[in-house]
Image: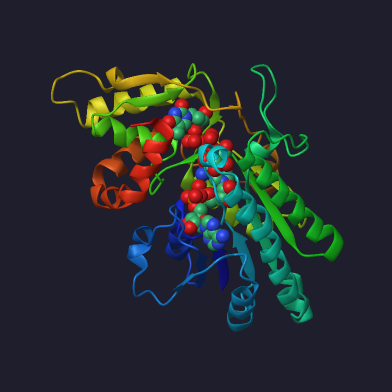
Length: 352
Ligand code: NAD
Ligand code: DAU
């Protein structure tokens, strides 16, 4: 079996669902269920003996030690993190606690377990750390996309904490021989995305008749990847990645934020037109920029595609259409995540 951390969050849950759709290898899913963790996403696995959910913290070494010894996973995949840049600006403490100290404790628990494995199991074991392109900092318009050889230049408390975790993972390989793999992925979107992030926020606000907040001039560029393509990349790296290596994951889909928002508005105009006949783009509002806002991210995923044969199945156009359709069809999931704690965040961040 495999142990997944953070498997009740956006990408982790998509990964667990996809894993069990394609394999009978069981999953232990360790998640603290912070505001971002949501068991509703995993509802289809209720009663499925292949999925064992455990509520807990990656920093809890006693719990980790017990889970690892009892279930003897052949791999640990670490999704657990605080993941929202704006929250890291309001309160960086949780990001240091989970992303840095939590990863350290997780690595130590896994190292102790791995050290005691029989030689063949030790060799087959993998620790895969899921990270972000934000560790590389920001690009000018004319810069080539981020390669694995780019310097780490994180600019936000979030990206700095992820960079720190990547360094720990690297060091645990070089110093202790722990068989690690790291993936650095660009912006994901798709089903079960928590609506604090741009794409689901815009879909939900549009439907609720609220303003669509674009930070600054809206010309910041992100490289969007459909979440299921990210999950496929992680499975491929787990299967065949070279130990100690990092793999950039991206969809070759660079888009300015304002274009992303306009695309969503056009899709909604087509699929769920406003009753007054006006376009959703009328709801766009330019708001104060994010402090330290990175201008452009772009990923060069050549290493992953050439070495491991991965390529994304979705274009941005096909993925965003599926995503908008998913949000229109899954109002129950939305009602649940947009309850009390969510409303508090919206009022802190947007003052409404
Ligand atoms: P998310 O915020 O949706 O989910 C994070 C999950 O981790 C939640 O279920 C939460 O309850 C859990 N968690 C938080 N702290 C924990 C702790 N101390 N112990 C155990 N569980 C804990 O995040 P996401 O968007 O799914 O991102 C998953 C991973 O992928 C993160 O490591 C993130 O840095 C990375 N990543 C995200 C993106 C993206 O676009 N969302 C892109 C590249 C990389
Ligand atoms: O690049 C990978 C990263 O992508 C991940 O590591 C992070 O976990 C993930 O949250 C995401 O970070 P971003 O900051 O790029 O994502 P977010 O959806 O918050 O914002 C996308 C862009 O949209 C960014 O330039 C900020 C802008 N934005 C965001 C929000 C929430 C707005 O203009 N308005 C908004 O209200």
